[in-house]
Length: 395
Image (tube, rainbow, N blue to C red; front, side, top):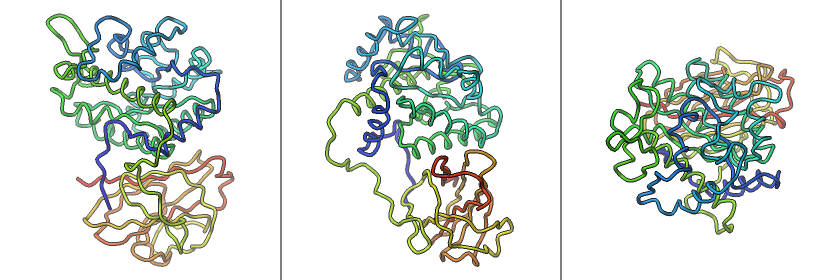
């Protein structure tokens, strides 16, 4: 089992490139030179992206980003330049609930106004205050599905660090959800959290929550992307945002090449009792629609339910690990349990689980996890799949 340190921006593999092009093909009328901003105060901030529309831009060693900067600068949108636009889908204190409120929702109004090809969907910073990750995951999945159905490519991102010892573990938990959704839907993910950890003061302002800005004397220079300028939190965020926009533009415009050597290997196994799907790296996330019902009983697991369609996963552990396994369902009408079966795919030897989420201490060796849907769940999961994820939370 390989424990991955995720890059700051998800690499555009051939699989993701093909997925982004499929999304874009759903609506040829959207504008490839326009993006929508969605989120809370860190998105609304005048220090975030606005400066790219003005003269105080220093790309430093990142001159390759000039074509992307010029393309978005030249775009004429309602309210002026796309970098400076006041988005209807972003507001101080906003969570996903505010963004998706209304008929049409605020997100939908922004999409209709701009017709953007891309959406910087950077929610989470206010959602985390509720400490309800399951609700956040459901809302984020709903947003992603809504955008992709319209041909809009969502770009997801992490919450920046917090100085609060109470909130930082929740921030990391929410970030793992966002990363899992991005992985399951094969979408770009920007790890603002990891990028800001090495910065002085975590790249945060005095409140310990919002990003700070690099200053030269009295001047705030959030678009100074030199090595010196990248000591500021907003500077790092501006650089990573421009970089991910550059990458997705290239993915849509460039030729389809040979298979990317950096792409993760295709899963081995069919997800059945006789052919479990192998998980080679963590974190892992996937959408699934279990359809075969084989296992029954789960003796030893207190929360065992009625047998239903399942999918079986195989994990080979080389050192002790603490794993968080979780499933997110479309709503409370779909009941799913995760079962840890150990070395043998035998329900009678169940070692734990039966609930939608659990922490599992894994000793070195072979382990199996089963995701099983209660047969009484009144929902066609081909239309509303389950999101399953495994995250390494070892210290």
